[in-house]
Image (cartoon, rainbow, N blue to C red; front, side):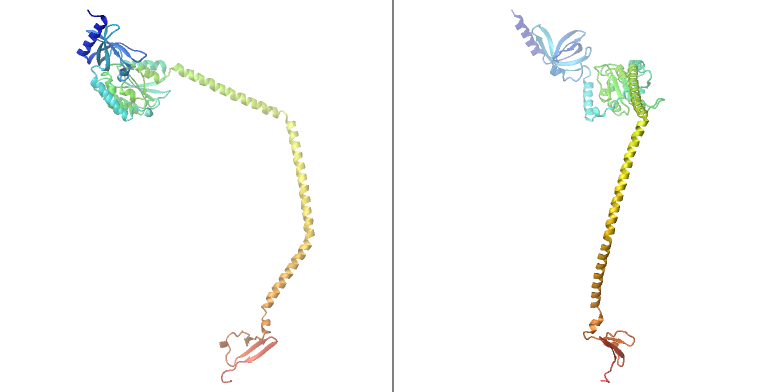
Length: 419
């Protein structure tokens, strides 16, 4: 006879030896995440259901948000929870069912585009707080368009809205979305170009939303000259467009709300600004009124100001008269001093000139040729009085004059025959 505990352990060992590891596919049901981060749920199909537990270390690495109704593939090991004797699957890996290849493509393309910098926060454009013209890229028959139109009409009925139609599902959808984005960027309506673009679509499976994971669409969103708000799917749905867009909204309606604050809020802001403007204007008026009162008080006592000006003028007049007298006294004293010193100065100047003249006379006397003649020299000239400075000038028979210290001596040049 088995005891309960050993029997449960034996069953658990048999399951582990017979089935583990195991992979199973089913629909998520009752999914919950505890405060510890561990997840608990059931996998079900038409034939039954299986309790599952996924610990935090696994849940943090699956790369998507599980939700009820989502079909998934899980791998793990079967076990029996002893305290209750319940069969459970300890999940060690999870991915969307039937979408394994698509999901792998999603991850590869995401890694590639992320490495290129298309998802960097620094390249995102700011969304205008008060757009005047909103562009919407979606299908004309989509419920998302009705949701967006309703939200914009309710919140900002004065804002212009232009729809750029494009399929949001199917093989033709990526090319149409790229063309619609290009058309929106080139659009110039009556109210000018669009200020912001809404790229929206309702929820669906990964296959339904795959157009928004297309590389050409993602690059078109990242390269848009206009800021783009992506509102694709439900809150738990993520596409590559969400990462490339300038702003991600959890739903199409939320995308419309992000770019259009309620009219009542804007009117409230205007009223607040009006109150501030009126207050500032009133403060300025009060300040100028006080300044005017002070000026009026000063202007109301002209006699006092005139008396002050008269007193100031008298002070200046007294200072001018005193300064003039002092200047005249100084000039008179200087004139007297100059008058007393003038004769002495003239006498000293004459004496200095006499001494200078005497020195110059002495120097000139030293150059007097008569002093040279007194030492025995003679000065020869011809009849015309020209000085004889060389033998060639004294031709035989020529009459010369020799000037000596005490007179002039006539001479005649004798030739060799005369000798």
